[in-house]
Length: 347
Length: 229
Image (cartoon, rainbow over all chains, first blue to last red; front, side):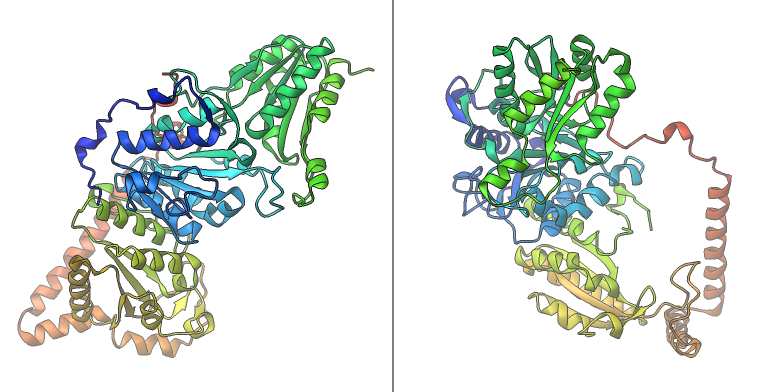
């Protein structure tokens, strides 16, 4: 049995130097982030369905059971509300739990705990009960998992005061967001798009810890601002490349943090390009894309030279059939078309 | 309901029936993982036994042998719905026992019986066998809330249960044993009433919370969190 002590709060320095500069995947970067956190802080443990013997539904935690044992890589029964609430209680009891929920659709069974307890106890208790909990889950479509495994509901969570909501879209963020999330005294939700786990790339030096407060400009440009996050980032960068070949220089913003939104970077870009396309795989109505559009309209209306464009998921339960699923999701061609409209609204 | 005192390990009531049970399991999990000798007690009603969160929590606590004392105050009504109208199996201790934990039904109108059962249950839990469940069979004399017109039960039923009101019953038993005198009972009643009146007066005299504090504690003060490193 692991027996963390008060002394455990003095965390050891980050490990993972061995992985920096090496070819890796988003999945391996996440695993290394877990290994690092579990090594540095004995209060940290991972709990969820099939995280142990199975190795994680998306193989993020593969091998961690052997390394850290069943107390800290804790297989939970199929009871999302029960084990998410247990994560909240363990956090109140001095631990630093990471709760893994297989998909965002399953998280609806835990929404009571996330909203009514995790996001609320600090305020209801007059500051007595901070909940330092991290909840990770898979989100998004593109793998033919159909309507009960594929939705993008992170915007619902971004609606809730008291939560920090993260969406790592790069290998660097997959590696670097977990540790600062565990340092946050309040609950942090991390949404991993299912299409990203096999993303391959090089982990830059210093990626063991990144900021979890700011958006990032992933491609600078002067003609149009394209705002996105998570699984759509790759498609937007592809679209930006196509646009560049036509002479349209798109600036691509990766939100990274869905709550609180980084208005500063968004507005600075809009004031520079005067044109905006928001790309979000989630449904359009009452969405995060609507919130961003509203903020731009509120704070930078007179800087706009064209109506705000949105490219969102079709308002249907995500279909299973490949061609229908593709049709339901934002695709690079849709993004390119929206950017062209924004740049030349009268054509 | 919305009272908290972290310094006393009191984690509050929860307006979502059964919503506090998974949290209790987690507090016990933290104690278990740190080898602390604590027991976490969670107190809920018969209505909570119909919620999925009760069953998820009972299973988790029993599966992981966590030090949780489940105390079900079965007062025979979930707000206005009588026990037999909400549960297929009204023997709640029997249902809890199906999770593989010790579960006892206790006369919840008998203070000494409740104290004794609780002591035994806590001893069992401290022995490392996992959670225990107490069904405390009791009754609610008053309406569910000030908005409840109490139309769902007979006045005669309330009167009948009042015959076994646990406070006078305990006082009578202690007096008959010579442990307590009439003067003791009178003095305690006066002291308790004075304490309640003082608390109400103190609450009334305390100023309102400043509106400027409206958004305080939505998040923790976190100057160093989330920033670039």
